[in-house]
Each structure stands twice: as structure tokens, then as C-alpha cells.
Image (tube, rainbow, N blue to C red; front, top):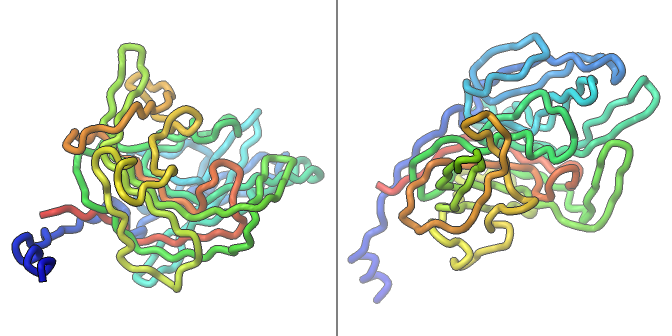
Length: 312
């Protein structure tokens, strides 16, 4: 009775939902990249969530046309062009969706030596700095986040997960593969930051809002309206906090381009007050959460209809 009385005195606030650009995954740029002859010389298809277009050349993509980048890689390492495709369009219940998969990017060098690199399917807001020149610290070749000043109450999307649940992880880096016990849940992450740049071009940030959910097992088909609430202020003091929701510091730091066009780590230095302004948003949707070159082979996550929920 008391709860009902309180609800009548303090009614739930109405919510409104805003779609994000290209978040319905109905528009795609198709890129045809020819790999070097030493690794087979095939033409591979890479996809970008963005304006409808087809690009027939080996060239960096102009990410000014979209807010979305992905784990699809156009690399040129030591003069050798190679690609990796772990994100691509697929048929969803309301049209086209995005499918993210953890798989090996495989090739044979000179037709003899086979290379297998494990890659986890991912979508994120930002840019891929192409062509990628090295396999070392791959996250440093991503420009993470977009300018963003709004304060959503939740991230909402439709999703479906299929996970092999073998209890085994694989680490695959060039010529070596290793298996060991472990779990690799899919992850949906939205970080709201207040960023600034110092006189030396270093990028600093405080965390304003945190929204993180993990999917640890296969879903029963599509989940419509999967909601990830945003916690403002110090998330570590909130109920349900997990270590993976924490500040991204040290080796976990993400990277961005500063005003001089230099790659710099984003130094998350602390939790902002709940009412602090927002300058940037980092959105990451991944088929796994174990980091570079490690994951559960076969993990697949479908996503569609990404939108933001706001209190009226």
C-alpha cells in the first residue's frame, strides 16, 4: 500500500526515444579491397555502416560520412595489404541488421605458410585509422568516440546472441594459437565523458555516465528493446557495479586523435559529478569482451535499431 501511494505521488517520468544516425542498419557502404599477391591477391569485401555506396579501390574510408566504425580491418603491414571481415549485414526481423562474429582472419603467405589471427566482431562510434600499419596494440589505431552533449537515460537496441558455450577461449596471433578455459560474454558499452586537451596535446577525460551490459549465453531468438541504463556520477558506488564498468586507464585506455591529428590515449582520470557536462560519447558493441586476439570462436551477436532513451 505504501509503495502504491508513493507511486501515485511520484509518477514515473515519461521517456522519449531518438534513433541514432544509421542505427537501423538499412544503409551500407561496400568496399572492395584487393589484398597483396603474396597473401593470395583476392578482392575482399569490407562493409561500413553508412551511406549507400560502393568503393572499388584500396583507400582509407572517409569516416566523416558516418559515426560508425567496426572491427573490419584494412591493413598494410610491411607493404602487405590484408583485410579482416568480422562485421557484415544480415537479415533481421525488421529488415537489415548487423552481424558480429568472432573468427579467424586466415591467409597463406606465398601459398605456403598459413597465418591465423583471431578477431572479434565489433561496432563502435568513431573512426578506424586506415590502413592499419601494425598488429601491435590494435586499439591505438581506432579514434574512439564522437562529440556528444546529450544526457540519455538509457541505450536501447534489438539483439540476438548465439554463443558456443564450450568454456574454452582461443588466443590467435599470426603463427600461434593457444586454447585455455574461460568465458567470453558479448558486451554493450556506452560511456559519456567530459574531455579536454592540455597544452601538450594530451587528452584527458572524466567519466560522466556509464552504461554496460554483458550477454553471457545465447538468447532465445531476438530480444526487442534490450535496455542498458546510464548511471551518472561514480558508477563504482552504485548497486550492481562490476570491475569491467570501471575507468579505462593504463593498458585499458582507449585512443583518440587530438586537435593536432596525433594519436593519444584518452586518460580517464576519475568520475565526474553526476551533473557534469558531456562532451563525448563512446559506444562499443562486441561479440566478445576478452580484448585483442582472444575470444570464443563462433560467438555471434546480431544488433539492430540502436536508439537513445531520454527522460521527458
